[in-house]
Length: 580
Image (cartoon, rainbow, N blue to C red; front, side, top):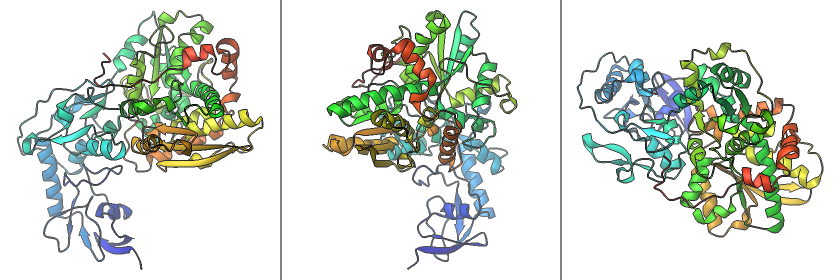
């Protein structure tokens, strides 16, 4: 028996699996139905009614994002009745919405703004009471402006469905309806992991990334400072989107050239410390594995995940690697090793990182991240902030001459590059662990078994007779399942676990360009794997700059100096947390 149904949309016939929505069926035909509350990452909500269509025989207009198709259904998406209904909805939203579009962070990238243009809203016929909510900037990474909220519920759903953190909820009724953290607390006073997925799905400027660009500009313009910038792997396959490029376009050379044009004194690569992370984590894992000490070991470079672990599973922090993230390893070394090699007084170094992640801003502020004797990373800019900074500086990104990273801490391998997507840290670690354990060269360095977009992926890895049971989880909802299994005593199920807070990994971090492309994650991941294949070095332990730093400065992986600079201890976070 077939599970397909055939229906007609705007005179075109389409056969599609039963149970899908009218919106999805129309999309297959190339018919665009506008939406606002709907987002492809979360369950249909049908709250805004922007997507209404006429269904033959129905008494009222149907919300296409949630209405399931049926055999013989006849749908019309562009009648006068439909157009007027959609336009009315947007006009009513605009009646209560602030009119400061020119100064809004989402100007020219606002879905409400685009809808008004698309539906031909040239005036707002209604006068609504403008809300006057205070700006919530209590969170170190994210700013909430409830005045711009359109009650779409996307933040509520992504935080509960995908991340299972449940920070947001609807409160009150009617004209007093609002979206708020529990009990009306500020976003910095609740158990927020700072992952920023709410800002990535918000259609307006109601949830945005905290802007640190002016602080970085001030540092660049200070003649007494040497401003050193590091760039995360995932940025190079997303930054181009802010300038019209396709998701996954590799723009490493242009990114480096743009940063030098901005006035950064040194442009270096976080891939270097991604390779260093592998050296340290591989040594730690092999030590734990041999002695069966606090297994399984969990490895991750995701501070959103670290916050989740400390907030929700504090009794299990012992399972986590003590290694810092590549960002923080870099910050510690730039004010010690790099300063020594370049003969710079570390007090004159300003350390900046360009990251796909909003939670990195909080990570840099953590009091334990001062092992250099200074704040290791002074400022964190997200990919979106960098794009804004480039545009405000009059830099035509697409016309920039490509340049290379500077030397010393500027060389990374393909293993470091794939850190930017789910499974990448695990694969990079396996490339090194295999050769360290067996003493043999890997014939095929691509571990396809840990690749993919499955929420939790498990595999048995044979290291020439030594069996390693691994797991990869991305998205905090999937991480919760893994942690519950460990909590319930299933610790022998895995030896080595990678977790990323954001679905897809860093390529979809809360600070990355906001994309309407349903396949944006797959395209960015493909870009990282392409970059890996094209690089001359693809194993962390073969990076000559890594070998040099151990020879000249650190000693050996897991040694005394490495532990002082590159390792830390997780804590049992409370909340309220004061980071100011």
